[in-house]
Image 1 (tube, helix red, strand yellow):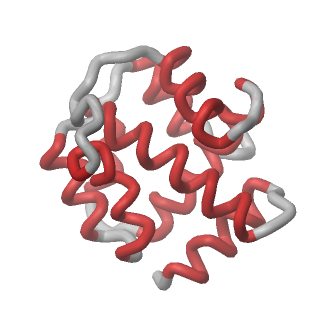
Image 2 (cartoon, helix red, strand yellow; image 1 turned 90 degrees about the vertical axis):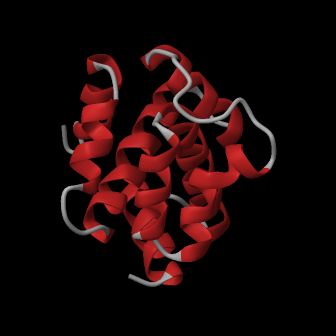
Length: 133
């Protein structure tokens, strides 16, 4: 999947008004996911995404963030995405589900399952709910 296609699918799935909003949602969700999952797993997932999208998973390593594999719960996950995307909590939860649906669609093999398995049950439930769940 190419970058433009990925962004367009997120825009459509999340019902966003612009590609800029779609880019911001992808960045917010994937940077937060990159903080939560183990570093090696974040790199493997990033490698299966369009380069510009995958870099969001690696950003915490590159820019000296808290790193990957950080421990935080569903509430903190949603709050971090909300702050990064400039939206409220319920909208952030929806963006998480929409972006990760497209990530799952864009990747091959068991990588998204491994990512889900690395998350605590409260976050796993959120990321696997989908936009229709």
